[in-house]
Amino acid sequence: MWPGLVGKGDEEGQEPPISLERMLDLSAAAEVDGRKFDGIDYFLFLPHTNPEASDDELKVIADLIESKGFDVGSLVAPVWPGTVGDSAMGDDEATGKFLDAVKMACRIAGVFNDHGVRKRGVIRIDSAEFGVEKWREDKAANTAKIAKTFREAAQIAEGHGERLAAEGEICWAGMHSWKDMLDLLEEVGMPETLGFQADLAHTYLYTLGYNAPEHALLQEGYSEEEFYAAYETMTDKLRPWTIDFHVAQNDGQVHGAGSHDKTGKHCPADDPNGKLDIVKCSGYWLKDATSRGIEHICWDGCMFPNATLENPDTWNVILKAMIDVSDAHGWS
Image 1 (cartoon, helix red, strand yellow):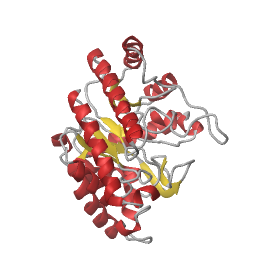
Image 2 (tube, helix red, strand yellow; image 1 turned 90 degrees about the horizontal axis):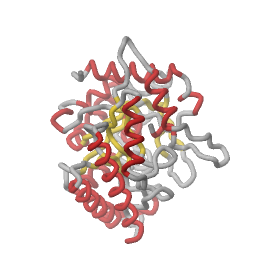
Image 3 (cartoon, one colour; image 1 turned 90 degrees about the vertical axis):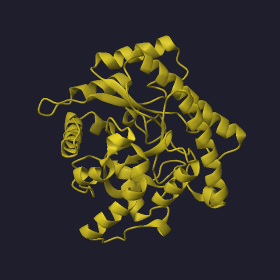
Image 4 (cartoon, one colour; image 1 turned 45 degrees about the horizontal axis):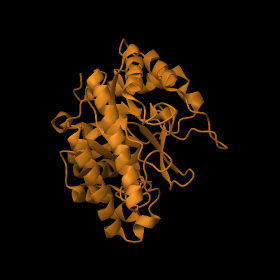
């Protein structure tokens, strides 16, 4: 549901958010050869959801989602400055806000679980530290700080029977390259409770070393053989930690918005400039997926223009890509 919110707003150059109910209706309308979306992944913030909503208010939302024929899967905790949280490598006040956001997400997850609309999925987080320059001032100490916050967050999640997945995206400090992401996961050292969320679009940029040239696995002009060798290197390192997965496409571009450092750009699944064979690349991440507790896959189209999201073809193309991934890699 978050493509209806992320990058949306009332500032100059922004488009208005798309309501939760409209996003549900757009999802429900998609159909490919008689198959439809089974559920939604869900960002726990306004205007879709007030993270401080009462249990009764959350049950109304759960009823709405269920009425559209959907389960709820993974949830996105509102860990960023400007929502509930703040930087995971900030001072005590900032990290306290980060942990409060995780507590809120776990409470909401519990309401949805008890309702019955949610039967699977994780809670997504990241370091909520925009850009990597501040992190670079003291890499070891700042990674240790993020790891400490993540461990405390994982302990909260564990107490609620939940798992956390840290999304690898090149704008988040300490998570901006495949190697730094791996180092952070290993320093947290709680693989049963805190793992990795792999997004095809974002992890493609990991191979190119955006924001971390020292960790690039590919150079511009790479061959297909070089690409898959590099892709296997990356996925072999991060796949054992991967507990949530996003189908997506990337055209190789990056962009920045506000205080964000350059970050990944999702593009439509059938974009002629897309760099990925979605089905083949998904297989590298989904090998032995069920052994890591992955029970569903999701798509991500953050920063899609509203006109793209309002186009039914967008949803059908995405659904077709996900069905192809599912069929190719043994999902029912």
